[in-house]
Length: 216
Image (cartoon, rainbow, N blue to C red):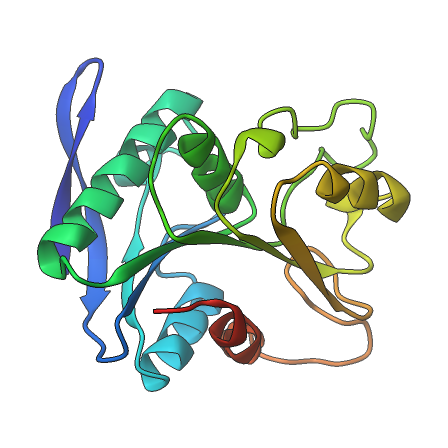
């Protein structure tokens, strides 16, 4: 366990993180979703599987989790954390390519950070939360066309956060460089009805998809 300093408007705080060095020249930063911290089995399984493929991984919390709160804080706090995590990873391995990966909320916050100037080699979204379930009239996508780095959307076809899928397709079409990999029948956490799997196994199953996209 390590600690990353994050500069917030209220002062400097720290967030906990787990660093696993690899040898293939790419570092994958991994952020959690809104409802769970970095140690959720899904993320642990995902990061362990990437480590097995030679990637360095840095899995970290956002400040609200460190403070024991259940609901995310201001977006500016998450964006500051993304910037701090990327800087920390570069200090650990200055030569490695940096890829920002996040589950749901964590991925959306990464995209906002990059739209505001964070430099990364690419982004991977594990279930991008385009809108709240049942609220497609309020999409969270205005910033995506400003993201120049390559983007990979890994999405379940039954995810309520991207229904209707035609709206999601329209949003992806506005991106500068984006592709989608669909998990047939998958929900927001990539669970598939009638197929019971541990969350760690589900996370690990996505690693080969991400590994094909992430480049040193």
